[in-house]
Amino acid sequence: MTSLTLFGGVNEIGGNKFLVESGKTRIFLDFGQSFSLLDDYFVDWLQPRGRFGLKDYFALGLMPQLAGLYNREALDRTNLKHKEPAFDAIFISHPHFDHTAHLQYLHQDIPIYLGETAKTILESTQETTNSFFFSEEPIERRDKTVVPPNDVHSFRTGKKIAIGDLEITPFHVDHSVPGAYGFLVETKDGRLVYSGDLRSHGNKPEMTNEFVKKAVEFEPNLLIIEGTRVSAGEKRKNHTEQIVREGSGKVVDETKGLILAMRYPKDLDRFRSFYELASKKGKTLVISMKTAHLLISLQKDEKLGLPSPLKDKNIRVYAREMKAYKKWEKEMLEHTVDSEWVKDNQKDIIWELDFTQLQELIDVQPKGGVCIHSMSEPFEEDPMSQLQDDVLHNWLDKFSMPHHQLHASGHAAMNEIFGMIDAIKPKKLVPVHTHGCELFPKHLDVEKGKKIEI
Ligand SMILES: [Zn+2]
Ligand SMILES: [Zn+2]
Image (cartoon, rainbow, N blue to C red; front, side, top):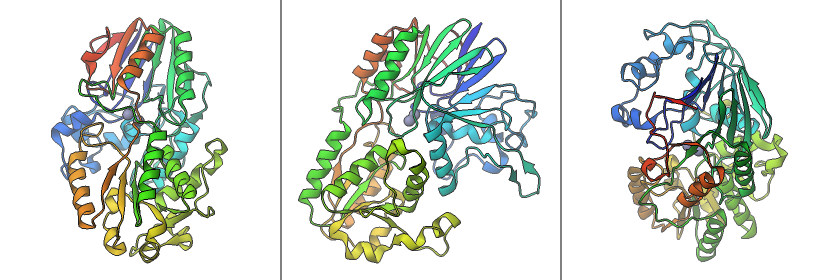
């Protein structure tokens, strides 16, 4: 028998963690945190105690207590014994946090499979933020014991990977981050397709179209599909990247002062839009050191064709004034500009400023500027953002900067998702990553932790 068990992504947006079991073979598709469960017990500074590994998560039922899945450190303070690995692989659809957050707890001997670009992005994120997903080097702990490295494998689109009784083929899809894939899974009892997160209105719709075509030909018994925008209240226009570019161009033309541009850090399609806009309008794009690090890391992937931030004449890298810099920051420090430079050149700049660094405006004192907010509006895809939105508006009001909302979603619209289902014609349908299950055509009842036969 082959079965599917959902441990996250059920009636919530994100947190995908799906177990596929076939004979003796067990793999996970994605390994994210169930945020809706986490939000029941934690808010703001009240968070699970990191130093206790999975203790708080298990006690509150936030993570499945499965033997042979987690690493020794994660289980140190729990009643679950550390055992030999009982799972064969973890397949990651794309490098967003809601699909990868729990890799940090994974047993070192369970192989991780992810796209080559996805791996580069997670490695860069890991170096420039306080996050940990995996390590390919042994890590020495404070008590001098050594944690063995993870077993990490990267793939490219169309490469079939055999794991025990399963054959998994990743196919690229278009999403708001490069290195995004859906999976076709062949089992002894039938075929399964998992969409990951996807859209058809970004810069590379042909990738999503190819995935859907492969899924149609595959004639799956079961389709797991995302439904972020499947919602009764969904009335927004399906903004494309093209609309964002044109709208932003208009704002730039009408503005005499500093242009703030805010986007999701891993959304490199949006980066490209701002970069091209800056080049076209004779402006300089000012980016963060984190973005520079990511762009430098991705230079090895020529297909992405991203500019090299320290060499490109239309880009400057912004360094905040700090008491001390990390090693990776020091390495690029001599190529950066500071708040004084931005202040002096503010009329000729598009500045990608992160929400958490709005204090920089105090040093720059913008005059006659605007803000292009190129992220979700509150309550759309990110339930925490209403508070942030209020705070952002207060900052912008303080510096008399009008707010322009210009964003193209990373997710396909409701009618597009239903179109894909219509084309793929699965025997069984499992909607995930959505609050709108009831709106989907005939589908299985999805319930966390319940086995579904394929
Ligand atoms: Zn997601
Ligand atoms: Zn995503």
